[in-house]
Amino acid sequence: MAYFLGLDLGTSALKGLVFDQTGELQGTASADYPLSSPRPGFSEQEPMHWQEAADKVIKTLIQQLPTLQKELIGVSFSGQMHSLVLLDEENRVIRPAILWNDVRTTKQCQAIMASFGEEIKAITKNVALEGFTLPKILWVQEHEPEHWQQVRHMMLPKDYLAFWLTGNYSMDYSDAAGTLLLDIEKKCWSEAILEKFAIASDLLPQLFESAAPVGQMRKELQEAFGFEQEVTIYAGGADNACAALGSGIIAEGVGMVSIGTSGVFLSFEEAQEVDYQGDLHLFRHAIKDKLYSMGVTLAAGNSLSWYRDTFAPNQSFQELLSAISEVNPGAEDLLFTPYIVGERTPHTDSQIRGSFIGIDTRHREKHFSRAVLEGITFSLKDSQMIMEERAQRKFTQIVSVGGGAKNAEWLQMQADIFNAEMLTLSTEQGPGMGAAMLAAIGSGIYPDAGACVNAFVKYGKAIAPIPENVAKYQEIYAIYRTVYQQTAPICHALAQIE
Image (cartoon, rainbow, N blue to C red; front, side):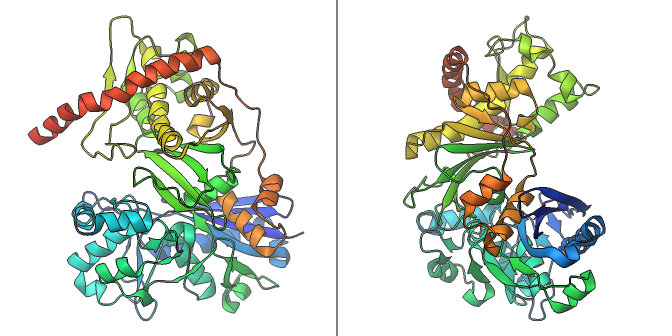
């Protein structure tokens, strides 16, 4: 039996998942690591902690499944996007990695867009935001010139693990697309961007397809883990790309909505010429020569957590949402906008804040609870509408993952608001499963992504939209779309007072 290991390097933990060649999960393990915030808005991690976590996870999985030492074929990765890792000439980490959720780079983003914004959009199909890698590089150049002088290699988190395992420098196209350094059409590092921002091309790693081998496990590690055969290491992919693969998003007409702390609405993109002018993120997929687009709601599950913690701290989420079925769509004319930490799509506004609109004396906890869920879903629909209006995308099915897939009423709400059949995964394993699938594809066990999805990805019962609810929500959503324009001036004025 051949085994494949997917290592999912997240923001708070690394998770390892072992699948056999039939697509059945055979083992899981995880290891946590700390996140540092030395100053407000800063978010950093020590790459050594990722390496230690991977070492621990692999050893734990071998204890669970001793046959791994004889039959592990390949390892691949899913990784947190954008985070900047810098190495010196001796391959030592120069400074802690600056993470995707670090927001120190607002001035650098403004400078990029002011001096090179149209070129950035044309080359990368994205705009400069604090999460991306290029602004972090410019921040180091400006604030830590002594560190910048030492830089000989730049990479992203999962690629640091690939370097540890193989000794080779690599990055796949899906992760490279989130750096603001990739020419997304030509699939190469952009000479124009590198020249503009004084970044030497030899600092960047070689580019690979996500399922391509980047090397063999180093002999000393192979012996330390007790592997009796060579283990191939595959490039892997960005976490959202791997999550899409692990959800079966490999063709147009099927979308994915993921609700965690933030929320994502994601679409497979077949056409290479699609261009959302930076209003959505457009990245390379983990599938060769394919793209995906995505919009982001900054506070999706975070809005629900905030609401529960503030107004019903002694209730579980199940208790909090237990009565929402008693409330009709529209929550009795109560609207919620989930802008409690600002918003990304479609407004890109750090100063906008959330609101309840239409409160009156008949509204009780169940109305507010339903309004929060509807508002989160309306915000994600904003991304869906950009895809439908700009690229004539039509979604017949949407896969729901994360918190939004765990409540039956919320799933029906998604079906009605998105006006599409909602699917859930029978066993949701997240981006780590997509990483393992990349190793399975790269090994040749599966000839392509479609064959691999057929073996690995299994769905539960589909939830169909209810026509009368669809009609009601279309009417309410049209009103929801006006709230931002009405409240933004007020929120911006309040921010000036602070």
